[in-house]
Each structure stands twice: as C-alpha cells, then as structure tokens.
Image 1: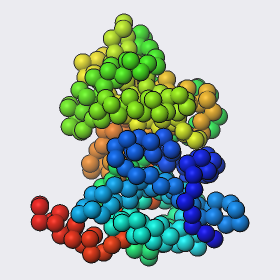
Image 2 (image 1 turned 180 degrees about the horizontal axis):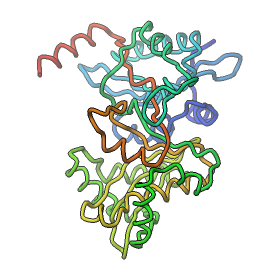
Image 3 (image 1 turned 135 degrees about the vertical axis):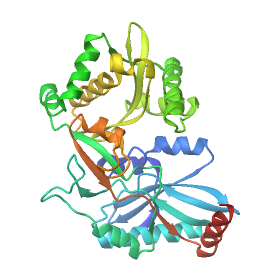
Image 4 (image 1 turned 120 degrees about the horizontal axis):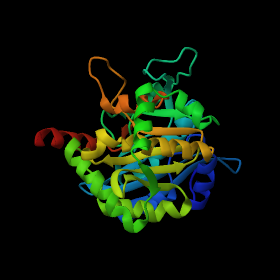
Length: 348
C-alpha cells in the first residue's frame, strides 16, 4: 500500500464510485475553496494500481503561520476496514505535519448507527460505533460543534411512486400540501439572474430565526460550479407571481440534499408554500431515480423534553434520523495545538 498525491480527475473517478461520497468532496468545492484562499490537495491510498481510499484536503494558514487542514465530508474510505483506516489516517497525519500543518479536521460521510424516525436504534440495524473507537485510538478528538451536522433526517425513495411516498407523510403534512395547491402555489427553477429573489428570502429568514445567511456571492458561485453539471437546483414557490419560499438543493450521487432555504413569514400560514416546495422536490428526486431525499441537519437526537420544530417539520414527510460519525480533529503539532487552545481560553 502506498500513499500518494493524485490528480483531480483521478479523485473524481474514485469519488463517483465510492459509497461514502459527499458533495463536499468534489473538485467543484475545491474550486470554491481555492477562490477563498485555501490550498487544495488530492491524496490516496493505492494498492496494486487501485485507489482504496482518498480525500480532498484543503489548507490555510490560521495560526502563527501554521495551517489548518480540513477534509470536508471526507475522507472517502470504509472506516470498518481498520487496517486501511489506520494506514490512511496515519499517512494523512504525516503529510499534514510535513506540509506545515498543526491540526487536521475530518468529517467522514459515514453513518454510525441505523435509526428510525424517532431517533431510536433500529432493531437489527447496523452499528458502526467501533469506528469511533478506532478514531480515538489514533488520537482524534470528536468536536461538539461543526459545519457538517452529525444528525440528519432523510426519506428513502426506493423507486416509490408519488402516492406511496405521500402515504407515509403525517396527515397534517398532507393537509398543508393540499392547501398550498388549492391556494395556487406553484414551484419553478430560478435562473442565475434571479438569485436575488432567493437571497432576499433567505436573508429575511436568517434575521427572523437568528442564523447567519450566506452572501449572494456564495450562491452565485454554487450556481456557476454545479448547475452546469446538473448538481444544484434553486427553486422558488410562488402564488400569483409572489415569491413565498425558496430553497437550494444539491443533486449528487444517490441523494438529493436540501441545503438552504427560507420562507416569507407573511405567507407561511395561509399558503404553506414551504410544504409544496418540499413535495415538488421529493417527487422530482423520485422521478430522477435518486435513492434518498436528505433533509440535512437536525439539532441532535429527538428529545420530547426539548421539542425541535426543524425536526418535526422534516418528520412530517416520513423517513428516519441519520446519525453520522461526526467531525473530528487530530492535533498534528501538539505544541502549536495546545498554544492555540490556551489562547482561545484566555480570550474568553
């Protein structure tokens, strides 16, 4: 087994066939990162001429000239294969250290425990918790906060018809969809020059719900990078020409991912456009033979004592909770790593 730098083209070929692929591990995201000052590397474990594991790494100096290295949505490897995992991650550590890095972050798109819609482990379902032990033994530390959610919510499409999919919705969700259609809500794709419509809705939503929205430039870059490949859709739900809800979707690999959205609060209760928007995309994903519709992040496992409106909205469409292995960091240069931690505590 050897550890080598590979081309973006060879990385894409491997990623396209990997069951652990993520849109975050694509040359398009690499291009976006490069435009924001990051350096990109493509690295692989190769055995007898075949790539067995790979990762896109991005790096940027973040502390006293030392760089943070990140594998967003990666690396792409079977974490249950302990010898391969140990070889690849140890090789990554050596590579990062030799390239002026002091810390490595990974976020494998790898499910940990199979769960039902209530977040409970499925009887007879898979359990990959041993992979977390492997990461700890290699010196990785799990992060409590990260950009990639540890818990998501998704609907398995499995060649189901629209009627079969809707039958699994909660009754009030079906009612909201029917009301939206009765009110004349329709959904269409936004052109690049119309992204300001999307941005206006997401920005007003971010202010209302107190989260930070992406700048318009980000959405324009995602459009330019992914729409020509058929891997991003910007949709708007409207009635009588009035935009009421909008969302950005990633169509990559076997799944459609619901990434960013917003709704005009004035119309949410009377028109339910946000429900029609989801239903439109779920039907489209099924028609295009995607295997899964991923609603993306939820705020941890469901807790009856702390109701989560985001989770309840997504659960209304059927599906199940997804638990991933999470985001981990590996101190590579311990002196700088501990110094950074100490300074961070001092600033608090």
